[in-house]
Image 1 (cartoon, rainbow, N blue to C red):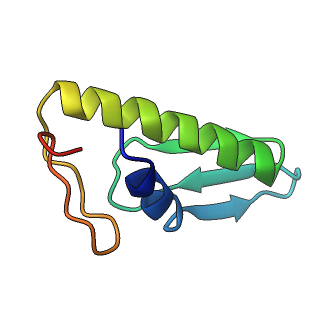
Image 2 (image 1 turned 45 degrees about the vertical axis):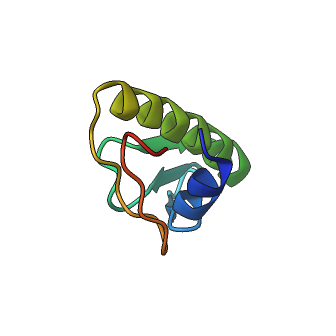
Length: 78
């Protein structure tokens, strides 16, 4: 798996802080990639793990992967 693709996707992650101190994060363009955790650091780490799993499943299914930054990736090239 290309680390640069994961880093590029993570740069687009969006975080929401809740009143209870927890955080929710998503990555626009990556459906189903989200995480909820007690701290922003935990949320970021878990979101990265979810993204990696999502990518592995997408590659196995031969789905076309979203473009991340200026990188164009397909299931055959990732």
